Image (cartoon, rainbow, N blue to C red):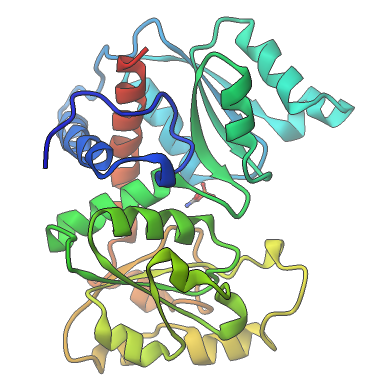
Length: 310
Ligand code: CP
């Protein structure tokens, strides 16, 4: 595959809009920044004189802290905005809010927003690099990049590898971004969950569907387990969390009964005892904390590459 020197886009709106070569360039850059993060002095001057605004209109722990650390490691100037403590509460529009922030000479915007497509709207109206840190049930591109990078570290080239995504596929931006990313890298992708939590036409995205947890675990090399997103569910999609855990919860006896060891991943936050038991999340099979560690290097790579194209 030809190696790019620069991304083919000025924004990271979603994995859907990246070329496979973009993803390979991000991974190559991530490897370099991972090496930097293991040095005694973890800071580089790559984003000196670049100002980044982190705009979070939805709650976040991992993504927000990870972006902020990535920006600090790259020596960027940072402003943080949280919708709950802002003039959005007084009725200000998204465009007005962002234009006011940009008039203070901001170069890059990292945004999490509950409305799918909010980032596309901004990219059409403002002159800054936009990075999607999660837009409603649509995409979460840096999560998919850090997931795929973590899989690559564990099992090597993803072409032909069997990756299963479990749980609430219907409400998950992580699932959609993972599907786009893994398809572009040539992996075989299967989704598994109760029929009510699998979108009807998901096969059109190039994945297969299985409702049997054990069969899917037996099939896959890597299991990416998703949270039940109760906050996005306006209907009842299954009788109770207890019943969900019974049919779709991954526990240690189940893992131990498989023919081969598999890699367990979870983007967090985890509902321990629902989609995954604590002993599985904390087991040697799990790379959940490596995912979080890789998140900083992946986000450094994305920020650096987008800033290089300015
Ligand atoms: N994985 C993820 O997006 O976590 P946060 O919601 O805590 O950022």
